[in-house]
Length: 117
Image (cartoon, rainbow, N blue to C red; front, top):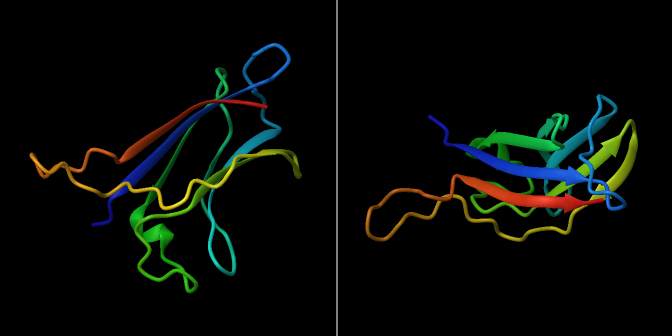
């Protein structure tokens, strides 16, 4: 059974801080790799400009990053086929470390907060 991970984010317009919404927008969660970046998940923002992007640990495995457990993540906001915004790459995101006292993995969800575009 593969572990399910989540990344949360909210997108707003820089000018007036209103949510970025609409069926023409798409947010892609990408894993930066040596040869080809992998798309881990994609969703349309909801009415609040929020997305919840989920993927399995096994989705990070690719020929140019075998057995990867700490992906290099970034988000891409598209409007149609046009890239509107791309976040900086977050290197070696650790989802799987365990709490040393409880042994529980407590980082299975990462909230990236509000991204101003």
